[in-house]
Image 1 (tube, rainbow, N blue to C red):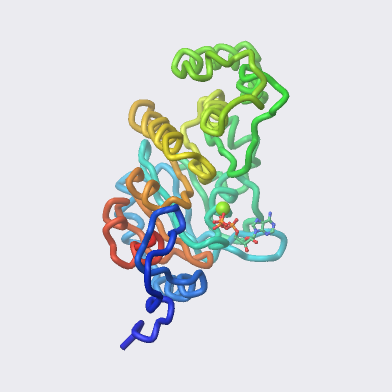
Image 2 (cartoon, protein in one colour):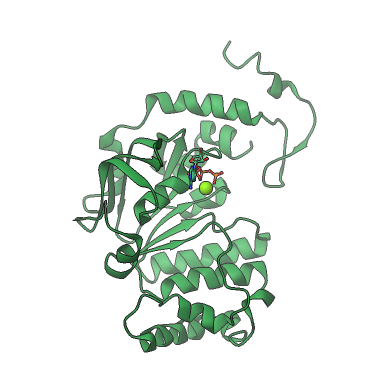
Length: 293
Ligand SMILES: Nc1ncnc2c1ncn2[C@@H]1O[C@H](COP(=O)(O)OP(=O)(O)OP(=O)(O)O)[C@@H](O)[C@H]1O
Ligand SMILES: [Mg+2]
C-alpha cells in the first residue's frame, strides 16, 4: 500500500517538530518534497482561484512566469485576492514563495503573464512606482531596520519617496499614537529594540507610504511566541480595521492559515492546493506535510 514502506513513519518515540512542538512521527524534508510534488501534479483549476478571489479581485496574477537571470522559478502561476482580504502562501523551502512577492513588487525578471492591481496592469512597473503610485508596500524577510538611527528616523525613512517630508512625519505621529511601544522608544536607536519591536517598526515603516497592499514575508520568523501573537494582531488590525489587502508568506503554516482568508500551497514554483485558510488547516494532507502532525 502506498506509504506503508515509508521508513520515516516507522520512527518511534517523540521528536521535536519544526516549530518546537512534539510530534509522534517525522517525515524527512525529501519525503515532504516528494509528496508535495505529487500534490502539485494535479494543480488547481483557474475557476477555483477565481472563486476564492471573489467577484472583484484586487490583486490578480495571471499565467506568471518569472525568475532571476535566465532561471525560471515560477511556472504559469495564478493568484487572485479581493480588496481587504488576506492570502497566505505556504510550502517547502525554495518553492518560490518569496519569489511571488518579489514579482509583485518588481524584483524579478518576468518572462510572461501579467500582474494587475485594482484593474491596472503593473507587470512592468518599477518598485518605486509600485510604492508611490500603485499603493504596494513590501516588508522584507530580512532584517531591515537601520540600527544606528532612532526609531522615529527609521519611520521617516519609510517616506523617502514622498514629495513632502512633512507628510511622512505626520504619518509617523499617527503610528506613534497607535503603538505606544514605539512611541516610548522613539528617540532610542533601533538597535536597542527587541525582536518583536523591531518587526513592529518594520511593518510600521511600510505604513508611512499609506499602501493598500502589504506584501509580508515571514512576519513571525525568529520571534518568541508572545511577539508572534503581537505581529498577527497588528496584521489583523491592518486588514480588518484599515482594510488593507495582505499577501503573506509564512513558514509557521498554522499561524498563517489561521489568519488568512485564503491559503495557497506552493511546490516547485507551482500551485499545489488552494482554499480558505481554515479549510486548508483542516486538510489532512496539509497537516501531515506542513503542520508536523
Ligand atoms: N535573488 C536571487 N537570485 C537567484 N536565485 C534566487 C534569488 N532568490 C531566490 N532564488 C532562487 O529561487 C528559488 C526560489 O526561492 P524563494 O526564495 O522564492 O523560495 P521560498 O519558497 O521563499 O523559500 P524559503 O522558504 O526558504 O524562504 C530558489 O531556488 C532560490 O535559490
Ligand atoms: Mg522565502
